[in-house]
Amino acid sequence: MKLLFRATPGKRTHLGQDIRAQDGNVVEVDQKRGKILFQSYPNNFLPIPLSVMKLGEPVHTPIKLSDITVLVINAYPDVLQKYLLPSLPEEVEFIELNNVDNKNWRSGAKALNYGIKKAKNDIVICAHVDLVLGKDWFEKFIYQECRLKNWGALGIVGTGINPQGKRRIIWGSNYTYPYPVDALDECCLIINRKNGLLFECWVTPGTVTGLTSVINATVKDWEYIF
Image 1 (cartoon, rainbow, N blue to C red):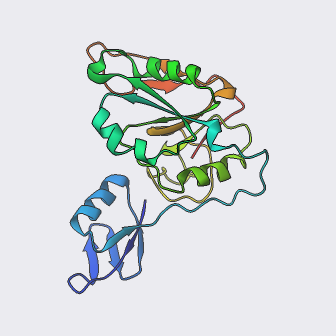
Image 2 (image 1 turned 120 degrees about the vertical axis):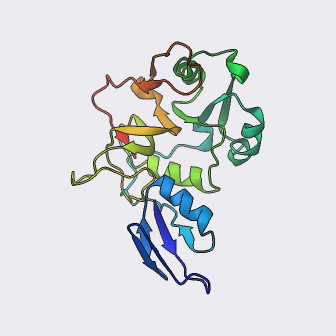
């Protein structure tokens, strides 16, 4: 992720580890380091929001909000009510898979596969209950989606090599164009059901929390996109 440093009377520069910042400088750090900087210097480090990518002309008719399904495995109702639900437009389909105390689902992958099949739409957003989607998030997503052809999964980058093959991609980095990656973070994973994507299931004995799964990647003509 990228952060903007703003000087204050009590802190005019930041000198620490590999960061050397003066007023107006932009630094790039991983998500963990960024969180530490926010907490330690809340008046100095500001996040730079991701910009809407310029992807050219649309390749198909833009979808509507009613064409989107948001799917969650809900083990924490209070968290869902506080974070994700207030950020969802009324027009989207919302599917909640109740799993308080892990009573209904022993596998996150099986639960999500059930929800994906149940959804009335082909665009399915698998989200964590503590996710907050910004007020213009859906507008930006619709703008970008209609400019992508035959995609399989979209989301926040998990890991991968940048297009030049020079270094590994930092989680949450501000890249201004889409490209294939090796994995996507599960906190907000968008599935294009038209390509027949589901999750493969592995359950470790004694483990009933977390998403112990990956997307079935047998289809060859689509890509993970960040």
